Structures are given as structure tokens and as C-alpha cells.
Figure 1 (tube, helix red, strand yellow):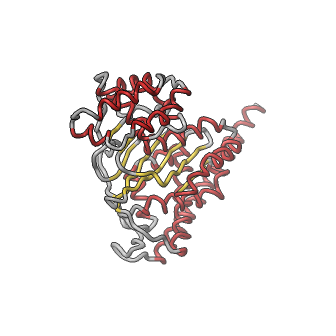
Figure 2 (tube, rainbow, N blue to C red):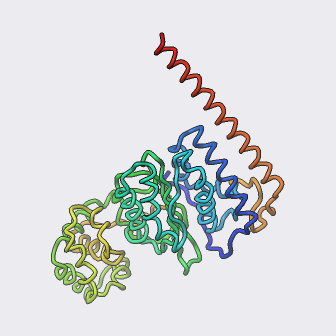
Figure 3 (cartoon, rainbow, N blue to C red):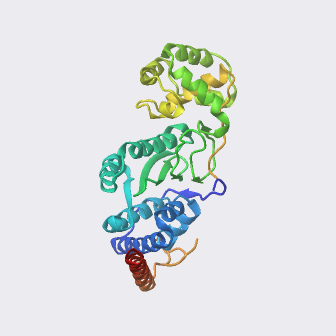
Length: 355
């Protein structure tokens, strides 16, 4: 889904313990119901849909339009699935702030449990974060990164960036993809704004030239940037060039030169190459070699139990608890149904073998 958007104002505060405990319980029962009915893939697909996820957060009872809906819903989901991860084969790694830095270690442990190779999963985590912090230059600094892993190796990422000057947040959704350099998102939700999109599908030629430039000795790119800064450039280029210091650019580009990346995804994966390095390569590719960049922004519910901030009404605890109990009962019945069906199939298999 690449259309539609949801503006997310930055809000302070946190969910009270009594509410977060209920959010965790309801998130667990909802997730179990979805996985039993549609498999782990069904849960991942829903989490990668910004409209479903927004509705999910609202049903859990958080502020319907707050940036905190993302962080709190992801936190509740992680805590909810921890005790049942072995049962449904789904693990949530990462989280907000410092917790997000633990994602590689948590993915390593989860991969070992599921019998998966952790390397491509850790790489996917780092690349998705790199794209949204450096390749999509939209003014939002990523501070929340949740990686949802299924036992078959499929995954979803929900991460969010903040823009302190505008007081808004932007949420990025990913669903298992082998491609990180050509419209890789499942969706992006947030306020529209000025953006330099280095992973837009239509700018593949710019990426090819930028990758070739990254393999050259950095002084060549630095020289081109110096010349650009002495010319009267179109307004949008001047803005992008303003905070690129040619004297420091050589050091910024050196890791890419030493790595000799084969393609743009490999360039994104180079440690030390961030927004300024990628922007410099993109601008040289556009202004020197005629391969344009893109400014296309990738930005493309209900009130079940009330909201933490009292909008549209205060959380109705009794109704919330009834919902959790009802859903828990439904999940239990579903599990029993699956057990009965499984037992019947096993009996048929035995009959076939004896017959």
C-alpha cells in the first residue's frame, strides 16, 4: 500500500502500568487468533499495513493520533509474544532508543532457536534502518526499530523517525524483501514534506553512477563537490549541498572506497557511509553525469476501548477486560479445533498404513 497517510504528532508521556498490562494481554490474544487462522505470514502482513497497525494501536487503547502509538504498541507486542514465541514461531526484536541497539543480539538468539542463519536477518535489520535514516532523507531521525521474525525466516519491520522542528513523527513499514534499493517499503505513514529519495525505483541510473563513484579514490568526488559549491546552483541543490563539508568528505567516503561495493545495496551496507556521503555521491551523479535524483516522498480507526488521553473517551477497563477474556476463549477454542483436526488426520494416517 503506497497511498494514504496518517499524521503522527510527537507526544510525551507513557502508558500507565494498568493500561500497558491490558494492552499486552489483548495484543497476545489478537496475535494468537491471527496466527492460528492465517499463519505467521498473516500477522506479518497486517503489521506491515499502516492502516491496520494504526487500528491495532487504537483497539489497544492508546492515543489514536500520537507518535507514542507506534512505540507502545510495538512494546506491548514484544512483551505479549515473548512467552508464546515457541508456540506460534514469531519473535519481536528491538524497540525504542537504546533497546533498538540490542536487535542484532536478539535476532542471533531467535535465529538459533528457529534453526535459521542469523546473518541475512541482521543484515536486513541494519539495511532497513540505514535506508530510513540515510537513503530516504526526509528530516526524520529514526529512534524506534522493531523487527518481527517468523520461524520460516520471513520478517516485518516497524520503525519510526521524529522531526523535532515540526513536532511530527513518521512510521516506516517493511515486509520481507530481497531489495533494499528500489522502493523497498511496504508503506510509509506520516506528514508529507521535502525529501531526497535515493531509493526511488526511477533513479536506478543515479544509484549505478553513485556506486561507481564510491569505488573511485575519494578526492575525485570531493573535487566535484568543491566545484559545485562555487557555482550558482538550483535552489534545491544548494540546500542539499549546504551542510556537506568538502574538507571532511574525503574521510566520509574512504570506507566506501576501501570496501569497493558491487552495487548500491552493498554501498548502503558500508559502515560509516551515512546521509551526507550518500547525498554527495547522488549529487555528483546528477549534476556531473546527468542522472537525476528523486524528490518523490514514499509517504504513501476505530475506537474500541477509548484512549489513554481520554479521547474519544477514557479507557473503559471493564469492557477492555471482557474483550481480552472473550478473545482468549475464542483462541482456546481454535486451538482445540486444531488439535481435534490434527488427531483425526493422524488416525487416518495410521489406518492407511495398517490398511
